[in-house]
Length: 485
Ligand SMILES: [Zn+2]
Image 1: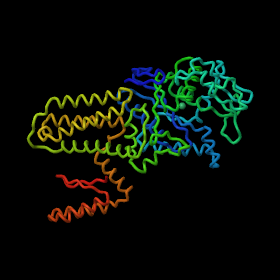
Image 2: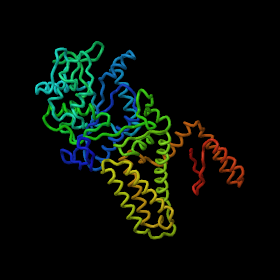
Image 3: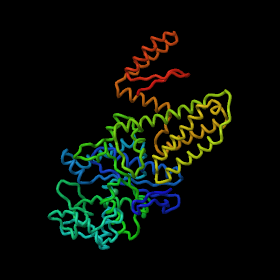
Image 4: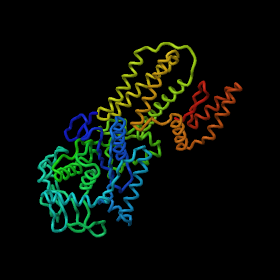
């Protein structure tokens, strides 16, 4: 597999530190609010990475943390007059529920910062002992950025330029404006812990350095997160970890791109956050997941409601194709005709291509593209009665079906039972549009009866009535299928 390494800004052949085993750390959420689609994208991207590596035979140990002590949590708790533990607990639970619905697998370890205070203090102690950090008389501890000459390498920033852009808050006792907090002196009403430097709490960056090293050992094979975390969070994590250990921190850095809404960045000031729950009101979770994988993970992704509807249609097409192929395989008899060898060759090529796309820096969009080409090929076989009946035709349909399903298992999309998915989708839409399913069934039964009695004008009237409700009918040899557009 080749992975684009943010640190070298190149695609490199992935080689873990230990044959067949992958140590993966991904920064999780700060638990102070519900998940928006940007969080969902990061979670889904790294979930596909884990599934793909496992499908390739790697044993993956995956750690994703929860930040449960932070200014944002403390502020929210103060506003709502409750403890930061309560706030964190609520949003960790909300995150887990959203991710379950998106079929994002739980990480092997989901540590919370507050469970690793001692590990963070040990790391801070090491940085103090080696001169990479200093404690102030007030009880703060800072990382000494100038002591780490490699600072800025990951984000591609120049230390002098950075320094020019930093605002110095009055009363700060840093040696250098670039220095950042490892330990913050306690303020009243905030959660705090005993430490050799006085009562306080950890800075944000130190938690990931401490937890990743503790749970996975160094160097990590892959460290991931959203692009917005590269600076300062990942730059600081890297500096602390390398300064403390004297060795490398992460062999590969992977960052997913932003999600925009209608071509604008999501921001508090624009008030244009789209939460995962907002989307779940309009579409089943699998549609959101499929949409999030529709663009290469490093590219920006533009969220719009029409794009979501397109994603739903596309996902539906894959399920319908799977259903049609399975149905064709259940029919037997009839005259067969030899399947041209080019068709088999083309199918093999497309199946290989879809795998290669995932191996090429997790190109999920390319992979899905190959699946659609494969479906078009499958449809050509279905349309040719002779090919469809031939032994080679049937075998090829079988292997196309198996391939689509197993690719779906890696993407976490279009891998469920087609009949079940399509039925759930119809029910979901019926409920959202307020369509009474019993009424639909009654009208359909009545229409079937009218058709049996050759009362075609009555049947047409009923079809129109259903169409007005938003229900479209498709008459086929096996009866009438219905759908909601
Ligand atoms: Zn982190």
